[in-house]
Every structure is written in structure tokens, then in C-alpha cells.
Image (cartoon, rainbow, N blue to C red; front, side, top):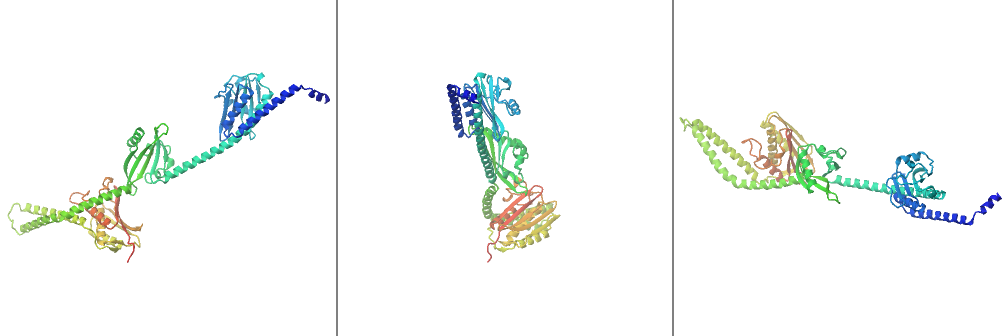
Length: 551
């Protein structure tokens, strides 16, 4: 033991100084590397700092850093003697074979080059140190040297120390990066949900397509209604397969125009709802551009239900037209009635003279009877038209008082059932109990109800069901008069309340009945609306305000 101690004391002082200096340099390098890694929060930056520092400190041909981390993926960095980045050093099969040898053999001097981890440079010796993270090898640091003389145990120890420090640093940075990514992912998901909630809350239908005509956005309003399609069934599909009920050529042309011109396209559309009511839509196709290139990448389609607006415009136009016709009728009816009365009186006088024998023996007596009958019938038909015009032009003040619509309906149904008009007509009456009174002229309301019912019977030449339904709601009492007849074509729906518009044969209608009904109801502060399905039937709805306060 004394000899051994003596030998230790005989170690040359210069060698001790050299070893101490090297150890001091190693500690200084590790200390500086640790400080530089302390505030690095990105795994990629940790990998770059360690690889560059080791390559310079060891004067190596190359140094690569490789780690495969959960929630992050592969983190790699490689640099050669010239300071240039290595881009193709990661060879997964070799890495996986190396992992199978655990515990890994970390020193590989003069090994088979085909087994080197670094395969993008020419080197003779490679040292591989495993990255242990939470007790598991998650990667490596590999350093390549030009020859065996350039590599020794001191450099191996330095690589091992740097590897342990790098493992701790990259583990912390990976957790930080994962937390940041998780926060970003959550923020993106929250932003996506918030954006979807905004789009779903808008009272318009919205969908977006890309240049391949694939649907990328489909809001809730596109899911509801008769033409609604669930979002899950629409996203990712071709727009033409989803909108199969529309003419593909027309729809494609509309989208192509927006992609080509980059201009907003607005199209008015009209559809029929399940209950037969007509819906009006304003469809806008809006280009969405790439902020960098300015190219149109998507088209946003916004469909707005403008039914109320269109109906209001039609109502104003209809009211103006009715007022103009009313003023015209008031000015000319009396002037027309006078000559019509004279014509009818003369025809009747001639008819009476013919019956008294004044024209006995005339060969044209039969013709005279025929012509006189024709003159008289046509004069009375003109008289009915002028009477309708007069009714149409009159101010309908009447005697307004609280009335029971239930009684009006029962009385109207009784009158209609005794007219024996139409065959095979079944009449249904459904009146809600306790209807509140409305302030109206009972005679005028009954006139409107009977006119609507008469039209309904005319629409069922082969028979059917005429239904009356009365109910209260939203401070109004509504009366529905429905038939199961031929229905009204969509193109005629906006014109049925216009004066003189009729689809009946000549001599079977003046086209004033619905116009008069419309005038009566609107004069009472109510609303007359219609919905119809061709071949299924039509429903007219009278809505009148209830009496606010009874005396």
C-alpha cells in the first residue's frame, strides 16, 4: 500500500497540472452549456445549441442530435465541421436497430460505416450517446471524428455529460412546448367553435366551397327547413351532389362566374315550403381571396329569407294599384251604369213587344228573340262587373263593433251548404272554444268568407273537402279556408289579389272577388294570406286583430 501511495505521489507535477486544466475546461464548458440551455423553451433550439457546441468543443467532423418525443414528434439537428447543416442524417432503420441493442454500446471506434448514425459525411470514428428521458431512451447524440487519434475517454466523458444535460433540458422544453401547443390547440378549437356559433346564430343560411367545389363550411340554418341537410352529411362533399335538386349547369355557372371575375353575384330565388307558402330568397355568392396572392380560393354563399320584405313590397304595390283602380272605378261606374240601364231597358221593351205580337209574321222573329236575350244577358253581366267595381271602390267603414267570428263562420257555412253549388263537396268546421271578439263589420267579413269559400268550391270541380278552421293566437283571431282542389301555380301567387286577374274561363269570373276580399280585410286592420300546393289544394288565411278593451 505504501508503494502504491509512493507511486501516486511520484506522478509528475506537469501531468497533474494538465489534467487539472482539462477538468477545469470541461467543467467550464458544461457550466456554460447549462446556462445557455436554461432559458431555451423550444426543443429544436436545445438540439441546435448542444450539437453546435459539442462539434466546436471536440473539433469533430460532425455532430447530430436526435430525439423522438411524445406530443412533439421527431426533433433533429445536425452540423458538420464547416458549420453547414446536415439534412439527411436520420436513418430510422439504423436508429431502431440501435435501440434494440439496449443497453446501447456507446463507443464505436472504427466500426462498419454502414452502421454509422451519421451517414452524410466521411468519418472513421463515431460515438453515440443515448438520451435517457424518464428512464427510457428517446434519442441520441452522435459525434463523428476523422480518426482514432481524435477521440479519447476525455471526449467520451464530455459527450456523456452534455447528453445528460441535454436530456433534462429537452425534456423540460418538450413539456413547455406541449403545453404551448395544447393551449394553442385549445385556443384554435375555441375560436373555431366560437366562429361556428356566430355563423349558426345568423338568421341566414351560409355555406362555403373551395375551388374543387367541396363544401368546407355549412351553418345550422342550412340544416333546417324542407331543403335542409345535416352538416355531417354536407361537409367534404361535392356541392353539386348535395344540391342535386337544382340544375347543375346553372349552379356551376354561378360559381364559375365568381371564381373567374371575383365579383359578388346576387340571385333572387323562389321556393315553395312544405305547407304550400311561397318563400323568397336573396342568394349572394361572395368571393374569398388569398390575402397574399389575391386569388379567389373559396366562394361564400349566403341565402337570406326575404319573404317578409318581398311580401311587404308586393302589399304596398298592391295597395297602390287597388287605390288607383278604386279611384278609376268610382269615376266611371255611374257613367257606365246609365247607358247599360238604357240598353237593358230597350232590350226588355223589345222583348215585351215581341211577346205581344208586334213582330208576328216576321221571318226573323226567332233571331230577334235570340239577340234580345243575348243583349240582355250581356248587359246584366256588365252590370255585375260595374257593381263589383263599385263595391271595390267604396270606403268600407260600415258598422264596426265587437263580433263573434264563430257565429259569422257558422252562418256562412249554413248559407254555402244551402247554395248547392258544386257536387261531392264535404264541409268541415273546426272552431276553437272561447275565441276573443274582433272589432269588425259582420256583413263585410261574411262577404269575404263566402267569396273565399265560393272560390274554393270552384277549385274542386271533381269534388273534395272545404274546411273552415278558426283559432286565436298572438293577439289575432285567424280563420283558415282550405280546399283540396287544383291549387295555384307559383307564378300566379303574387297576382291573385290584383283586380281583374282570374284564371277562370271568360264569363265565369270578373277577377274582382279576391281583390274585394283583400280590401275588406286590410280595411279592418287584418291580413289576408295564401299558401298553395298545385294538385293538393289551397288555404286562405284571414287574420284579424282582437278587441283590446271591451266597453
